[in-house]
Length: 468
Ligand code: GLN
Image (tube, rainbow, N blue to C red; front, top):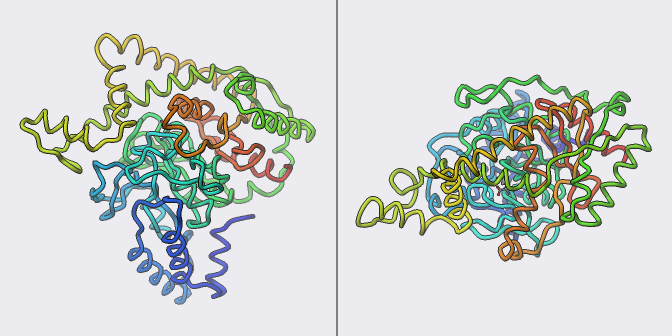
């Protein structure tokens, strides 16, 4: 298989690299990079951990699963004693008092964090231009956006600065930037990985997930991070996904594949992405797979339902940022003035818009009409998935309707930015596992299975990679 983690381990074992040498090299590249993908570089911490890893490697006690592997952390996770800004001005000096469960598990396996990575402020965005630290630049073309909100994480992986990065996905924030930078990004089943220590955006769809250049590494990382956590009551204990799922299994070919006709016929879809997607379906048919056309909700309706719910949840979650307990405070003559000044001066325009919109849809007189309607739509979406997965094993879709836009253009036309989430948000509302793989179209392919179906997704992605 193509595991970069195992390749690095092989180099450590053979002595062709020391961990300190590898980590110093990666940090040097991050320091020189013009992509603006890093909010906080963890140089001293990483170098100290690298020399401890070298001692372990030399002592021959055996390598832990992620011993000496450099990784990046989207700046929405807690890492004790280290800045956790959410790419916001209000938390620019905030230091995490504890470590997120998923990050703790990676550290316990020996991984070395290099950076807190730039992202859209509190996950609000699809272009990584809504950041207190400035926009991130796409890994393949610096004049284009990297996608968002986990843009810095996807760029660091695509450039090879980190071996993997941990993003966060509420409505597409791992999958869309992975598509725009041509790497793998997995949004697991809701509840598979603990959200403890992830800054809450929309708690009912927030997911922790890995971004990597290797499918095998996605499997390894998923196994390490998954599991029940007493600190997140939505978590469950999934089955371990064994490595042999990638060995050639002809049964994989018998899986029924579905796709949404209305996604492919949508006016919002780029012509080249459409024709590449259709070509991919034909390759699958030519290889003896059954491909079935399915119906789903209109993409504008999906985006509307998602944004109503996400804005409502983020308005509630961010109410705590009023200058009394966390982050920057702008003093006023009264406590109300303090709240107003702190929040208007320290939150970005996009985040303020979402808080105002969220409070509006929850307000008396509006909630029944807007918020409750979005909730019923969500139930219908979930019902539609249950019906579809009785007919097919995998649903394929483009990751995004368009290729990455030039920097600056999404700010002028936010509707286009919201619509770039058209194909990702539905699966988030359903809590389904879904992978963005750099295959098939210019912004990749999205592979979705029913809840807890990560094993089928990974298997299918490997199969697709082999036949394309
Ligand atoms: N782009 C979507 C939004 O702005 C999704 C973001 C995310 O998944 N964090 O809400």
